[in-house]
Length: 317
Ligand code: BTN
Image (cartoon, rainbow, N blue to C red):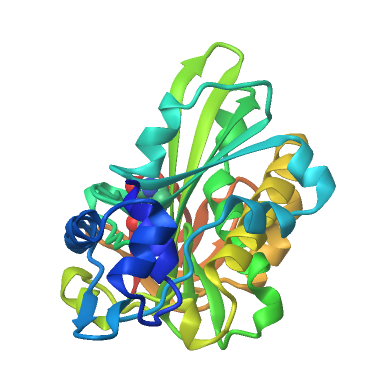
């Protein structure tokens, strides 16, 4: 029995008896009981009360292919192939095993990542059913210059997807963290799969904290927040909005690069006008926005310095 089917029967958070679950799944009560014990492996807590049955201690909205697709406009849907997985190591890694079937964008979402990856070798905390873990794969024509600003555009796509929610102090922390009230809401990891002479296969991974439980806090080494603090958007609605926004922006990026996004990006710039310094201490000054390639500009006593996203990390000083 697929444990996800069992989770979906329990996802409403109500009690369900063992025999009811067995009937729905076409298996014995003992088989149900065995499968229930597997759910703790997903980090799901199942309560069992004599005479009432079983329930999840917290209802969850499972990812649903039809609901996500229904939230994406027809034009965007046309060029896209969407895949869902209950559990992968990392969606950025697992997407490379998905064969192409003529689509321009391959999208993979997982309920859980066992080895979610963040920037600079960090882990990305990825519990089951609480957040969104999305990877988008597409081809980009051109040499290294074609990649300039891509990761900033991905951050902007996430911020713009959430724009209608009026999240307080929604901002982009260069190069691509999405913040709400100074706390991390989403992170982006751009990776290249195989360099073709004429271009790149790009994988853009987006992790958005949707309704992360606070018991994950000890695993996270920076201030963070979840979308559920600001909005009642379910995970499927949110996934659809993110995917549509990413694809829309990537289409435009492929035609015109970062330039057309620069002004909008600067309007959300978290560092704008702040004192900043490189983490290695080699440079400090005042943040002065980004250039047409998405590099961070820092005004120093020795003039304006350009910092490339691949090189360094920056913090407000
Ligand atoms: C960061 O801010 O450090 C980047 C986090 C990126 C996390 C996402 S979740 C989906 C995709 N799969 C991964 O393993 N990482 C990215």
